[in-house]
Length: 96
Image (cartoon, rainbow, N blue to C red):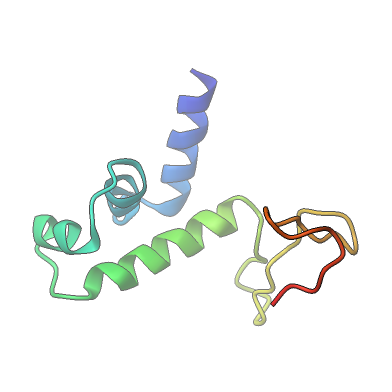
């Protein structure tokens, strides 16, 4: 029940107008073309709507600053100097 509450709170933060596209694409695994057709949107409009919805979701989780910061710099979850390991690459190698 707590997980359902968190999801509903996040979708409310995104807004009722565009939260449906997040559910369609991220939860129900529909493609952009299918979501566009179901919503009656023109071609490639789904990409823009999805980008807006994902940006609102990222802001809700505090990963980017709110609208007052023009740079919208992505916040880091790891410690200072943290570098994730990629399977198949030994630690300390330069990554592309």
